[in-house]
Length: 402
Image 1 (cartoon, helix red, strand yellow):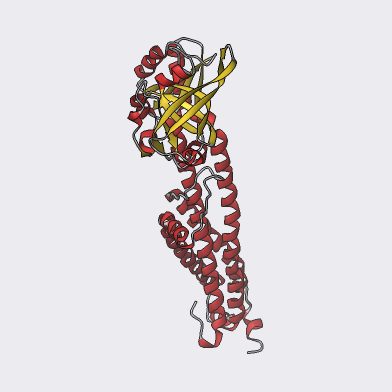
Image 2 (cartoon, helix red, strand yellow):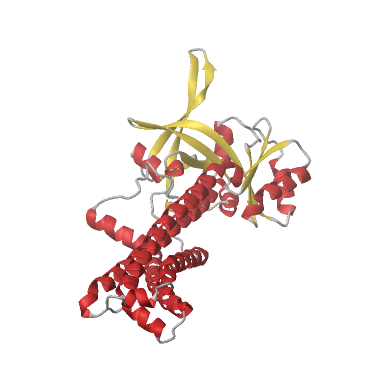
């Protein structure tokens, strides 16, 4: 590990092997943390806007929502329930226009079901009072329309009303009372909230709603919980949950994570196998010393342990350095990325391209431990062949020309 001044090259190769393992381990820890962060953020932000589960009528108009909400709240595994009305509309402000999904909500009940109230950037969700015809927009949608709090937007529906002059689209002016930002372009650009009573009047639903959204105590048991509520209600309804609506997102993340892990593990393997070349050079350099040790009684197993120990030290030091550096980067990645973006004026994740505009990171001990153990195992495997060659060195052959 610390060669004489006449043979610094071997020490340099050992240092390069350590550095290679350290960099590979660091990269794998950071990448896995970023993938975990994306999975966490995607789940949290999706659930904040779509709730854990929903129940709708077959024809899209649920008449007895109060009875369904009472049935849901009777379940110990349901935390809250809220009715909603969904519809499509065209929002117009001066010369700007944009299609959007309108969601009619009951603000107090909606706040218990989703996290919309926690992502408000201006105004409050409770400002959506019945009969006031106020609207809450996502920040991207507000930017597209070039509106702010207090401006009035015209909501135009595809369904028109028949008059003597012909079919005229139904329109209504709404006042922008708030802005929200969830950090996902899909919602910030396309979803707007109004009061559920205003939505019923706008879409002529009278006393019906589109469905009921549920917040459950165990999000991974949402499929079974929503089925239990539907069966207890006793009527023919359609049930859905977050695992069904967004299963492709989470499945793609899991596949990506597995592929990245295997690919980057190969990088660690390449770095670990540099130990082979290092030890082979050391064995060639130390042949005379090995022969002398054998002649004074050293066993082949002792020689083997010497070189296995040397290679293991290279792998251990490199792995520990990589773990420390990787953990530090993963824990501070969001701050580092924010600093780089502010200094160079760049954006790593464009909001109109990616679902999430921030670069999240979540460090998991299980990932760090598995990466470290695999790196150590690969380093140990890399020492076996050179150590075996050293143990088979014949003293007479090695000392013939010395």
